[in-house]
Length: 228
Image (cartoon, rainbow, N blue to C red; front, side, top):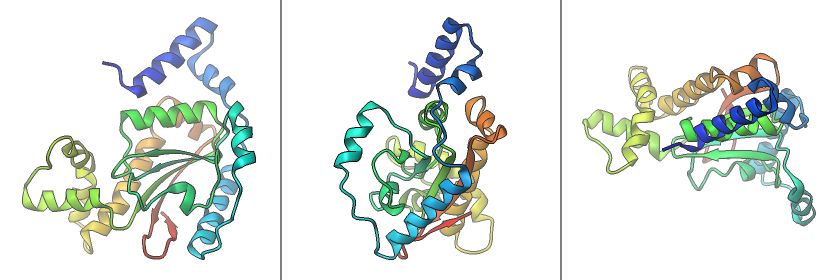
């Protein structure tokens, strides 16, 4: 059975073949104009997060923006975030409809389906920043560390999340300090590295300077995001 990531890749490849174009050329031609250079995009995220943490989030009527987005989208940043209900990227970065392309999974790790979604965004929307966003008190990370310590396994498909986070957890448990905190940071760093090297779409965009892959950790108590 073909997953979503493979579907996107095969669809783009087939379209390129039909058009007589190289795969990379099709992706570049279909990409929307870049809204902001990566440095400016990260600054916008940081400024929005500062407003949110300080209780000064913008009060915006989304009606007009919603109507303009019916013809398409051009998000300036892509965020790989945890599915945790307390970590909503549009809220913590104080952004509106159409500003962020968000992929969420418990433990904020890049699996095939998530990568396929990210590749689609990189190919079509002109986003200049891809941010891997971890957060304090991550239940998926805590469960993984605890299970490794106890030698147990998680029930059902929850184990697939544990398996994905295990390399970061093992590395973090060998370091001094809080294993949970270390694992949260290590998991973000590993997924940043994985995405930077993901060929052909993401790695090519990074190499050409069209995309910057960054990592950050959101603190539940302060509301602030610390960039790694």
